[in-house]
Length: 316
Image (cartoon, rainbow, N blue to C red; front, side):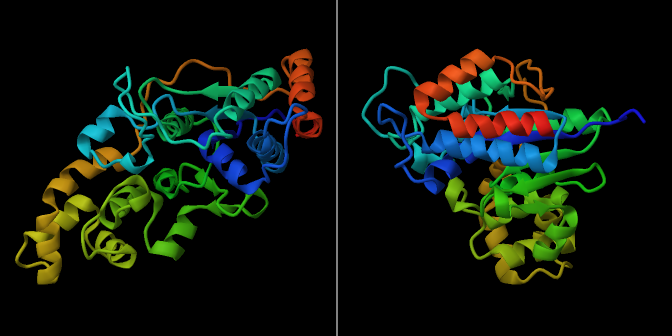
């Protein structure tokens, strides 16, 4: 019987290579001594995911802008603690602070993916999260099949949708121990579904992204409020409704956070219609450019890792 639908896998590539960089010893080096721990770890992530979940289409999503202007305009503290400070820059852009031995590895990862024929996707002015969201939205809107979103960023739980068959594969504990996150899982953890996660995250806040949240409202309270009042708009309406069951202290905190609550959704909610650059996400069974791949493997000491990737592509 002919296959009537395909599985799309979209990967938060910056998360993968940061996870690999900090998870694989930096004693893994190329023949000339350059650390390639992030490269090897990232390639092994791809090999494992392809072998285990057997996607038909894959897009390795990248940041074209890791700190988009529209999010910084909404909340200036957004990712501000990650900005590299080295004095005045000739360009009016923020540079992300990346470990010195990681930066040279990123172009190698890109080159290996290109040689293998694994699509890279990005959108000018947007983060990888927005690319992931846009590709997932396009796929499910077309009724093409299920989507696996690979990340360790909990904010992408907002994409989870059991009805539309979108799930998150959270690699926070490594790909071998990843957590498959569905609406059922989110309800068990937080009492909310994926569609509620962005509003929940706005209330709770996220210090890792420079988002303060509403003072005095933690994870449990945020989830309870969203469950009780439906969404962020419902919570804010309850705060000014004298007949609602909100406690006076909660009303006060929500009122005091009005400016933040006006701006935060722009930052937290992923963009689902970003201008993603054209790419071919069909996953090949044979690498696109074996000569280039072999040369990269030789130069950077990646023969074993590229061999595992070639095998994963051929055997899926």
